[in-house]
Length: 192
Length: 179
Image: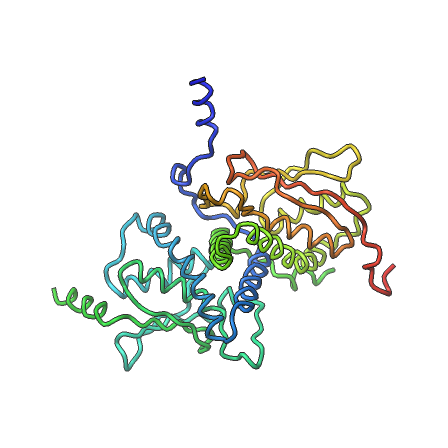
């Protein structure tokens, strides 16, 4: 009987943490992702009355993805070392995160001229927005708020509390607005 | 035909993006349905069905596949579709004696990387979206099928097995002008 029990345990599937970490190089067709994303947008739309509501729902789903990639990408690409400076962290997002998720880097990273708390990540053609045509009566809708959700949760989980929103500007611009204490901390670190 | 390659998007995306996006989608639905697993299963199947309805267009223009005359051809096409869209190659086995029912078996289901089902969700058919997708796509080519998960790696099975069963040919659905 004991033997039988042992046998049963050994055939149990491996816990996800027991498996070695995949390289993450697998690829699937863009079409299938586009269709799945379209279903996600439709689902959110069926549950909301206004554009901001719809964007908030997509944002939330993005945040869920963000939660999961933080550790994954730091372990895989950065030898488990987190970033401590704002600029380095944003560069990590612009390069590593974007490359892993979307296969290319985001085009630009800029700081706002009149507000030191605000940064912009600019992406000309977001992968998630391919094949999405925005209806005229909902012209402010940008489904890249899904991506904004990812960025916000990654930054927040790394200790850079912020709000991230997506806007139609030079393609899609993600506006990252850090909380004051994050900026102050960064300044203190520079002084040392 | 010659323009096919220039017009169709050959681009690939990282599997993890699909996996994680789908994961957050399922989580959201679970949340919205107050953890009513039966409803979630239905939702997932229907979402797959919607995807299938549109995916078949892409598949037909990509492959220029002719009409399938028997179930074995259909099975090959489905296998091909898995290769194109999910980059996996399922095995086609377990044909019924009347050749109207078969199984697709694969080990590396991209949807379930990183996924573990808590015990209370043991009824959740996480990969039901694939079944819905097959059903939707085949309906668009006038084949009604039943499609369901027989084995599921999230439930201690060693592979994912999807059973496809031919129900009937949808004669009436052929639009005017087609023969």
